[in-house]
Length: 184
Image (cartoon, rainbow, N blue to C red):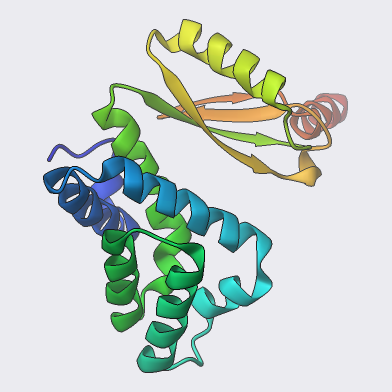
């Protein structure tokens, strides 16, 4: 498989690539994407789940049991469930969030899409996300999927990364630029 923008260079990228290859071979890319999206939501919403994936105090066995139980409750597909067991067995659950992002990029590339990482000061509405996707698609010339996150420190505006390109229209950056200009 090609090295999609350096994805394979990281540990999470290697795990994501392995999972993607297995999903492609078994025609379950969409099912794995849905399970990973569910996991991403659990990481964002549950302190207990985040602790399960990041605690160095849990043994491999306990982490494996905990992740298997979580997979059952979250109704994850079998490939993703097995993959989580491998991460737990290798003490790499802390790589889960990065692996999810890398898998999303690989799946988007497979579909001929580009993934944009979008950070906003406040959660975007569905209409805003649709408008953003339309603008980004027009700019890059291919379908764009978005990986959304929120960072209140931006104060307002957006930071968009597509590959090596970054568009920073955040108020925080504008204020820093203004402050720098006033000093000089």
